[in-house]
Length: 123
Image 1 (spheres, rainbow, N blue to C red):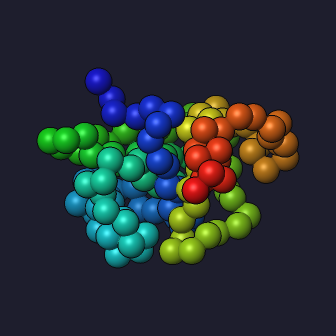
Image 2: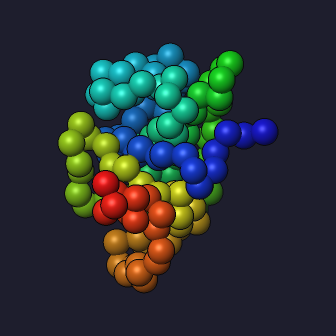
């Protein structure tokens, strides 16, 4: 089973990535550019300069998964703001919208219950 769910954390590398990179090259980007740990189980997203290809790198207990998508038409959205370390943490829903071609920056999110926010307020 592919180890991606809404419980995962997703980090988008906001710089163009050479899509010839495979497991080791992308792990190097995670360590050196994102200051992350590819063995953490977090999902790392990479998009090429033309924004027509995306790779997702994720660790699942005993090995890496590398998922790839090539668009036949259109482009993946570029985010106008970059967070610290050239990455943006995105939600599962944002990832799905990004893959499906929805313009994320023009959408407004409705207020929803969040157990994590409730726990943070109580601490």
